[in-house]
Length: 167
Image (tube, rainbow, N blue to C red; front, side):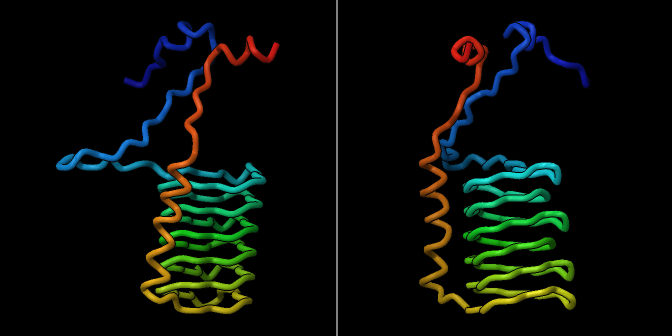
């Protein structure tokens, strides 16, 4: 039930990452839920992130993030612009937020402007910046922009040939 597969020996001990298809679900088919992408608390990333799904940040990111749902955990820190459908901040954010729904937990520390349709701030949250409500016309431009950028991301496939090419 919880045993390792023998695919590792078939690739000479090298791990293989399979290509992920981004084709839309056929009409009538239920879309499979995609697990969130997790940036753990021991990870620091420099660069922009784009996802069609959910991103959980418990580490440090220096760069812009575009996704459907962003959750910044208590140990998470982000420096950059956020464009998403929903943003939940429990940690630290320095930069702008453009999202339909924004939630700042009591442990949140945000320095930057927030453009939102819905904003909730728990007592104890720190916010330094301007908050402005988005019109319905502005807000509809957020998610298509995320999907357009995510669709342009190439799919990478890693194999044992990579080791031979770098030698």
